[in-house]
Length: 121
Image 1 (cartoon, rainbow, N blue to C red):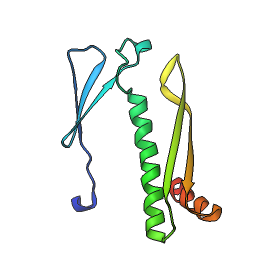
Image 2: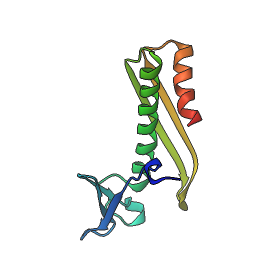
Image 3: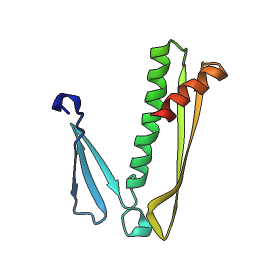
Image 4: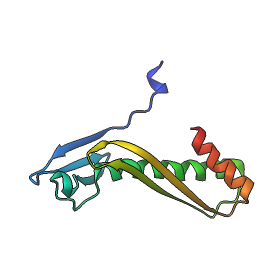
């Protein structure tokens, strides 16, 4: 595989003086992520699980939006609500992840096609 066929995303994370807090650099952006309080972190910023789920739901919104644009489907708005369920005794494993899309603009068949495009990815 040629290197021009690869996409590389880089995030640099460092610990901070606040125990349970990481400072993350993504290109020119900073993102603070905390461990939740039940794991001993400060719990003031988003948690790693929330950051992960935000990435998944944002991907869904952007893929649906792009598919609508590329296929000429009118899409006024797309929203995604995602929920990850884990056991408190082992938060490293998601038992279930559910995502709900709400679309404004397309008819039912178009909306199903747009969301199915995301699900096939």
